[in-house]
Amino acid sequence: MDYNKIFTDINAKLSSYKDDGVVASYIPELQGVLPDKFGIHLCSVEGMNYHFGDSEEKFSIQSIVKLLSLTIAFEIEEDELWKRVGVEPSGNPFNSLVQLEYDEGIPRNPFINAGAIVIADVLVSKLKNPREDFIEFVRQLSGNSQIDYCDRIAQSEKSKGHRNAALCNLMKSFGNIENNIHEVIEFYFDLCSIEMTCSELARTFLFLANYGKDPVNGNHIISSSKSKRINAVMQLCGLYDEAGEFSFKVGLPGKSGVGGGIAVVHPGKYSMVVWSPRLNKKGNSNKGVRFLEEFTTYTESSIF
Image 1 (tube, helix red, strand yellow):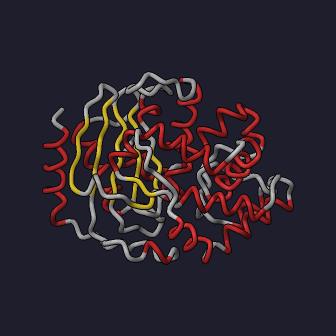
Image 2 (cartoon, rainbow, N blue to C red):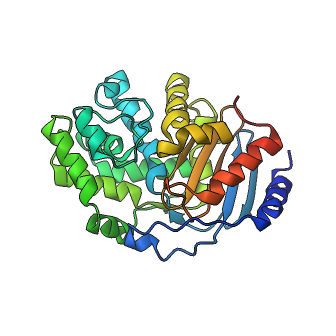
């Protein structure tokens, strides 16, 4: 398919679309992002690349990083991981304290904040140098040795991270956080602060489109079974409490972040990232979701 033409055609179709979403405001450093930015990048497993708009501009990937932290934790812990975090849709906001209390400190899935904090705790326990080891993993997958944490964004998140600290403390009270709370939360905020482009992210997630194997260099990142399971959790839980509607409209495993990015994969075909900073009430990119709905309809490339 000529994806570049498809991107252009869909963008023209959306020219009259009124995006009434708002840029994330609860993280001060994200408020200054230009709201009308729009980028797309698609990497096929055959090695082709297609792009549109602001695909080479860096943005804060935020919760999209949770796919990568989960990948490492799952590889280390195997199925023991699922004793500490579930794989069910939450049906509640991504930072819900009520649900965590009800579930006795076991987060519903690894993509809500509580689940990602548990994953961060696993990595603090198991990696020799968590901060350095994690960013090196991202650099290798993306093919860019310059990718790094953004201290400015991390500090901004820490200044407003009271609810995440509450989640961590609550899980600690139930025995589901092993390390020092301060150390775990600091690492979690660092993970979410990473800035990448659509093209870098799409390249990074090719292994999930290719059953665990990086098609560019042939490296086996995870087993095909683990890749299948991560994609399944993405399909069920990747867009917070909008995951069902996203599956209904788009039909691809996806993971969003409040920086406005959405990463999707079509197993056996491609990985793709869309970035548009205006968010809906669920914390997902308004235009990103709309574009992806049009894209899978146009190309008939839903997994269903």
